[in-house]
Image (cartoon, rainbow, N blue to C red):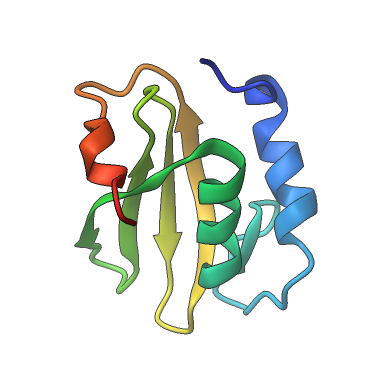
Length: 104
């Protein structure tokens, strides 16, 4: 299954995520929201869960979310709890095993 709104995802996320307060650290023009809201949207809309993360030189945490169907999203989360969209796409390899989602 592919994302229904894949071509429009940045705009859709911008609309959905713009409801929360955004801190000054968020780059202008990039959709950002409180982390809990952003991750809930990813799971509810696309079935994505966090697959990994790492600390960037600027102090943000880079997080990769993916679903068993191969859709993925990359976020930068700042220390204040604001997550900003970096990229979305399809065909993440290897896709997470469906068992990863069991019981979560």
